[in-house]
Image 1 (cartoon, rainbow, N blue to C red):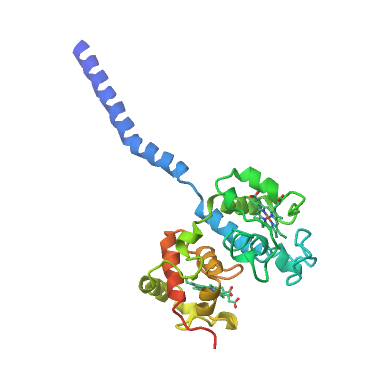
Image 2 (cartoon, rainbow, N blue to C red):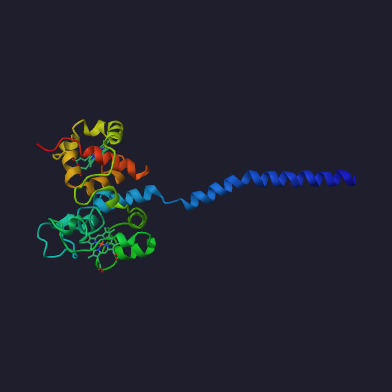
Amino acid sequence: MIVLTEWRKLVSGAIIVVIALAGLPLMISAANAAEDDVDIVSITRGGLLYDKWYKVIKAPEPQETHAAWPASNTNKDGATTWRCKSCHGWDMMGNEGAYSSGSYLTGIPGITSMANVPIADIIAILKDDTHGFEGMMDEGDFYDLANFVSNGQIDIDALIERETKSANGDAGQGGAYYGTLCLNCHGVDGDLPKDMGTTLGTLANSNPWEIIQKILNGQPGEQMPAMRAFDVQVSTDILAYLQTLPLDE
Ligand code: HEC
Ligand code: HEC
């Protein structure tokens, strides 16, 4: 009997070890999932909101010019002065980036230093007196915007040459992506939807910083795919291909 009891103990001990070992990979992968949970979906939506939040949430377009928009800039007024991108730039570099000149010159700084800053701190900035967004968006919108600012910024100068505006991508590879992802809507010449008026070729060459964001996050209010779940090189390759497409006539 003693022998049998000992044997049983051994077996149940072994079973516990086996169960524990079997559970280990599950536990490890769960832990990884939590660590890697950068929530691409939220960041991408935040990027769309950064582009044109009132279109994304189907809110009425603000009528007044934003209080933080400087009187020195008379090129723009009304709704467009409420877009994050209008003040901070498509490259997030504000007065040190593409908006250091041109029709969006405001002198307003960029937000690159806010990468990896706690989301709650960024949400507080969006609701401060300078921004005044409190009540205009809901908490989920603020979270996604702040998540984009904190976790969605890319090293844009590594992807797009600042002086030449040329994308550091493989246009051949980008052509394959374009053919399978974009062609149905944008056609071989890179235009078509809603009679865009400006070709993707012209847009990609004149404002590549805007277009990489559109590729990563999609187009506000449209059924256009967002490439952010893939390596950023995919988007850069697509941008390189768009730069080879026909320009406006
Ligand atoms: C009308 C112009 C304007 C708009 C639109 C605007 N901002 Fe700002 N933002 C500013 C100004 C000006 C500052 C600097 C405030 C200061 O110095 O106190 C700022 C600062 C910031 C900062 C802090 C930067 C830092 O380094 O301290 C963040 C983050 C930010 N804005 C995010 C956003 C987001 C996200 C949106 C869109 C929801 C947005 N802003 C829309 C004008 C604007
Ligand atoms: C389901 C259709 C659809 C697909 C697929 C699609 N797009 Fe779009 N795209 C649109 C629509 C619609 C617009 C808005 C056009 C307008 O407002 O005139 C647009 C706008 C754009 C814009 C912005 C133009 C602007 O002036 O703001 C860019 C850039 C763009 N698409 C690139 C792409 C790329 C690159 C792909 C493939 C990765 C792609 N699109 C796939 C439908 C699509």
